[in-house]
Length: 261
Image (cartoon, rainbow, N blue to C red; front, side, top):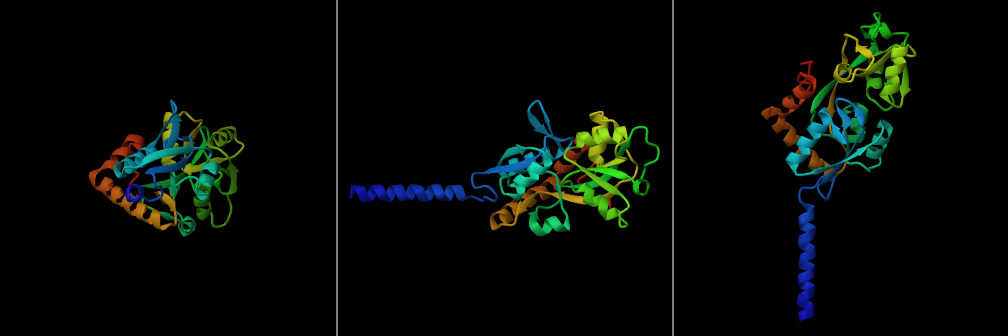
């Protein structure tokens, strides 16, 4: 009898343990979300004093803290971060714009900010102010970045040569030295880098190709539930001003609302 009772108690404990781990879990059963990112994407994501900081970092921290999840950051170059996400090593990816092609492969949360593309040129360049001015020229792009695709969308005749690089630092130097004519990236990001990081470029006047940016996840039922939870938090943060406050801290303007409305 004692053995039967002991077995019953053990089974009950295991059942309770299983229930407690189920919760409202989405991508992670243990309430830990693994986020892949790069350490050199100021002001979206960058390392300072061994701590990951940035606008998108702050947004992710606020969202997952509100939901009771702990974030485990996986930092590598962009190609590695994308590979970690695509192979399931990471649950989601930081600063990943929504495109029709990506939306076929992944599910996205609601938008948390709107990215616009821009061109970085050498400080002494007086010829490039718009897309029209880079036709017939070379434009640097970080491999895997969506900004190269945005540029292609604006270049229907294929007159702009896109040169892909593994990282932004080399592009900065090649543009400054005249090896390529311009650099395509997020305009707000580049403005902040020129102002705060003293990179040897300036920002061309024209902005283009506004894109929605959201949290991507693999298409699973678990993740669909998690996305619903994240969307509720994003709605709350829009209404109470949290997203606007984080944006103003990093950019001095609200990039969490569309400029095309």
